[in-house]
Image (cartoon, rainbow, N blue to C red; front, top):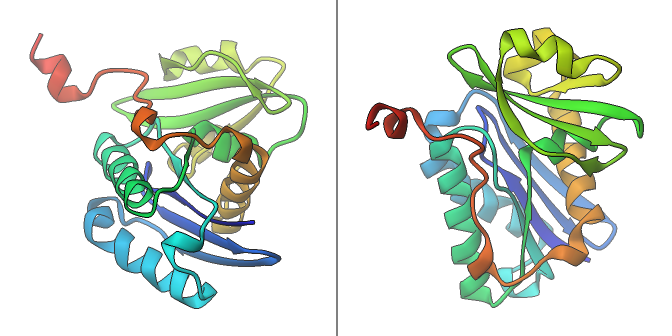
Length: 203
């Protein structure tokens, strides 16, 4: 199995390339404003290290959100462009999956910082996702009751604090567990959960 998986939905940049039994990874923290010009060189460097071309991949996986609106657009657009160019299927996973696949198989709540005191949350039973929603910090406690709370790095004070290794592991586990869902890239869409601030301001 050969694939490229990446996540540009948050403040970090996470990439993994699998070539058979070998795994090549790349992680950069606090680079949200640089995704547009750091992602492609990092992806090319990782593919070169693995000795793979796009045509030799079985699929590409992208974390399609929720998270940074700009980061999500960059990631999904890049993934679709590469898949169309190399005639590859695209696997769209969620940023919640990257967190959930690091947790236990019990009841979990994946939490992503949405800024301005809000959070994107999604309940999981094992690795089966429930309905994602947007909540304010006051609503987290009720939703987390009886569940393991797993948070992205910017929301870490509310739950388990993830390291770069955790985020890479979650990305790889989610991509490999869901690889059979890779499909036509034309159907891939970002997962936003709520409208952007600019859209809200236009009301």
